[in-house]
Image (cartoon, rainbow, N blue to C red; front, side):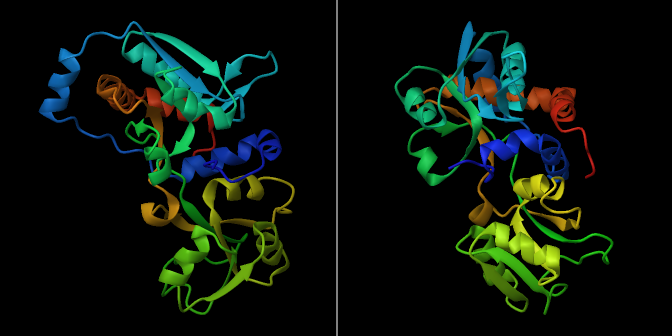
Length: 279
């Protein structure tokens, strides 16, 4: 299942909307290496090349630009990793459904295509440290009072949510004193917010950013309160998939990601693709 729960066609049209959401996510914390990890990195032989797989139809993460050149945030992160470990970078495109199976068959060493780290994906591949997360968010009418996004602050408030989602489960667990209004689709939940039938909407933060910055929202609304990123409900973040028996590559990539954060290179890539930094 895709990390960002939006239609691919909408992704291309609402590129800028994602910038606002990714900017609102807490930055990935740099993980200090242990002495054992640093020693393991020094002892590993150099990788001459790293073969990455991604797909080509998920802007702004991985897509073909107007000149038919593969680009995107994931693609540039892969290239930056190769520079950090002094390895050649071979990035090939496969259909989304074929990515993890191709990795398992040994057709590449890594997959960087916004895969969630879940029990199901962990059955197929190992994963590096997380390099971004996809939190949930509240949205409400523009110009309304600041939101205390806590169970106490939303007591009695009408909150729209799509039926059968992790977001509904989260509300029912932690916001029991709110008036939870369940809709068959997220589109109906969003329409309810537009017309004022509810006070707030709770949904996937990144797809909400596309909606808030697109025409469908009619400029009605904005994010309210901070992000919610509990792994039990909203996933354990996004990592780079690698073969389960390739501990060397996992060490190299984790070290490269750490150095990218420390040097500011990671932040530079974020600003390149997601310039609306409002967090």
